[in-house]
Image (cartoon, rainbow, N blue to C red):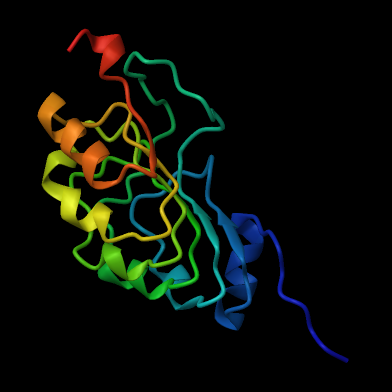
Length: 170
């Protein structure tokens, strides 16, 4: 009898299965986290990790007051052990930086770092450029300059960059 990997799991069931390393999705959304859940870092099969604090998928251009924040900053280097990760949602998690090892996530297709108002995107252009599979990057509500955004677009022309530069009148 063969075992197939679990496709989706909620936080309450995660504690029972985290040691098995067979999860493909982990959704911490809507749970109040005080730190990054490092127990997830050993799961080599994980493809989707959602640490966003709310169920909102499409944010308006104005900054939001998040009432149920997940404070996962700083992101530990062990995140980069998740080499099969394809989607990472760390929006609204009070990030002020990204791990240096980010380019190790060679299969990452979607990165959502939106609404981390202390995260200076201009500082991470080379790291983001080091993600060859990246298709979508959401930086709404983060700090970046018009010049930095243009450089990012030039370095990564195939990546859909979601930003709110136009709505702020820059």
